[in-house]
Image (cartoon, rainbow, N blue to C red; front, side):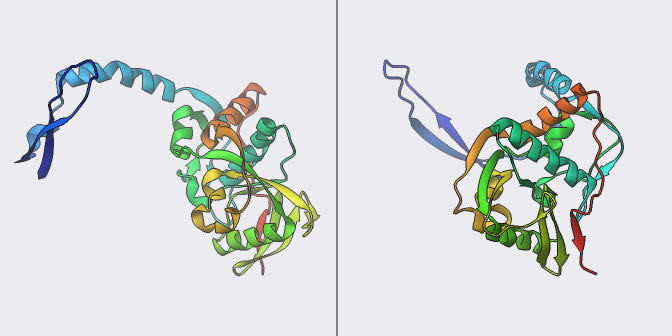
Length: 244
């Protein structure tokens, strides 16, 4: 394997300038000897590894049952979308009409019955995406639901609709028919708000950033559930149904 090694020679002067003195190009052969751990390096890393493992093993809450990720609706998706909506309301101190998560953003197939650790949440949501609010009128909400229907269904909270092919119909927000003139407040990740996962239509809308990572919102929600003496639980609620 070919690699390029830079030899940096620098002078310790009053201005502390760093400069490249020479560049050496050489061949480095990698073999089984590289699989052996360097005892010195390992001794340096070990205390941090132990501390990290201890932190990641912290139990945040217990799950009442297995909750799975699936389309068009799932118990895991409902749980996380509800957490997104509730925590967005708490952080912003205002009413949030609905929340959306993208299916691909949930990086584990399930949360299993039993203890849910901090490490599990990092596996679930490894990305540093922020929780933001957008304000859309009913017509734009309908466009958004069409895109979610076309994607086969994503986790949603606070609204419901029927999938008719790649179109959404019978859209309801908080149990009421969609009002095309009304302004609705949406909780969503900044990744999606910036047009990620084919949601370019959202780029034009001003974002209100909660300055809280989505992952941190889930951690806070899980701890909140535990503090109330409850367990994580979610069910299918016909938030997204398929037209027969």
